[in-house]
Image (cartoon, rainbow, N blue to C red):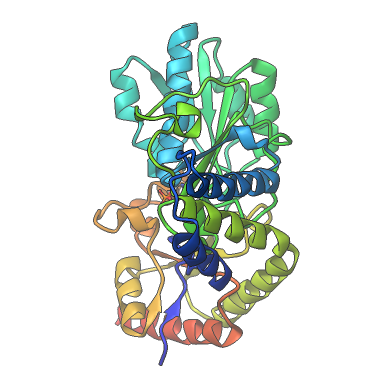
Length: 379
Ligand SMILES: *Cc1c(COP(=O)(O)O)cnc(C)c1O
């Protein structure tokens, strides 16, 4: 039997249309976009077309879109940008939510070494930050607030619009890690009052190794690397033109079909939860209202999530125990513990993340396999 892929928050299968754009670009538009001859100009045209399309999908201007190697780099560059800006204006305090991706949280040691103070903002039991707590955490020397849009482990949508408004009123930069949001819910960076916003193509059926950092015009971008004049000198290195073109295709396709995708995913989610409703000692992590439909995080009393994941894998089903980046660590998920789960309960969870490539038959097979695996793991 074919394997069932249900780990779409870790990465997604590239779409046929994005793959076609990518191979066509590699075959035909292979010039260096910085070269001034015709082949270079041709590649530059493809690159700028991709930039325009991506900008249009998120409500940005093309000049505010910087191509990066992915979400991690975009998050790092956003935080470094805030740090440099903070040093200039004498503000050395930042606020991160406790449920940020490691691409944000693991910047903290370096920031502290450079003299920054970081406040970690707690979340409620559904994974949402509180606006009141954020207000209380803001200081005169706060340069940055970083709260993601959609949590990649539990699917909770954060109150980004309110956070954006609060930051604007206080003159604080707001960075949104939008990697799990773009292509899954509507995004308008201006409506969100985002100073910075990161995206990664492989989370919405684009290729790996290409992402975008949006930076508003009024924010001075800091360099992670130094080199040529690419990306307005802010992200030097010959651009990944096929990646950019495929990213634009995948994002435009996702955004254009959101209205069909969302109800389809809601149905798959309902089917999954309905199929599992008789499992004893099962609970769901996340927010029942403010969430994306594709990410379903479930806990099973008395079962190790790790064993469950391995048993499902043996049954030909790919799910995860949390963020893919953490598989080597035995630490329980920082997201689930921030939501108040005991380490033991946090270790009893798996994440099933679906895309519209999944079918009802697959969801039924997942339900049967989960029930069987929970039973076996409890024996
Ligand atoms: C996947 C992910 C990242 C990292 O993106 P990469 O392109 O894999 O580096 C960052 N933040 C969130 C929320 C993610 O889901």
